[in-house]
Image 1: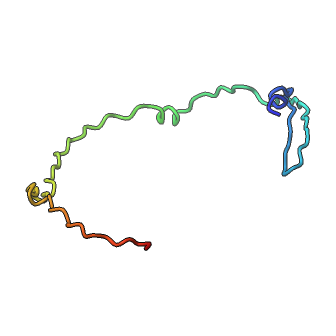
Image 2: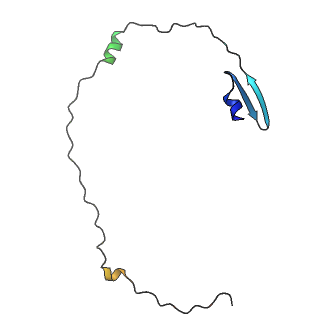
Image 3: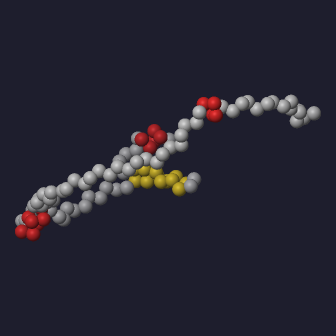
Length: 96
């Protein structure tokens, strides 16, 4: 149930595979700290040159490119758009 899963202690859980459900518990392993947290190094001359800002370069502005759009078809007159309604023929019943 969801209330069971929500109320689990830390490092406790369930593993489900198919219809098999197994309750699990994992022990807490405290690992030894073998490394220093921060090791400060002296900056070399090469690293100082790499971090320096490069000289700004002047950029020439390009001319804007404008192309004409392709021509559209001329609008159709309203009288040409409307077609007269088709004449309705008397229909035969499909199922007689």
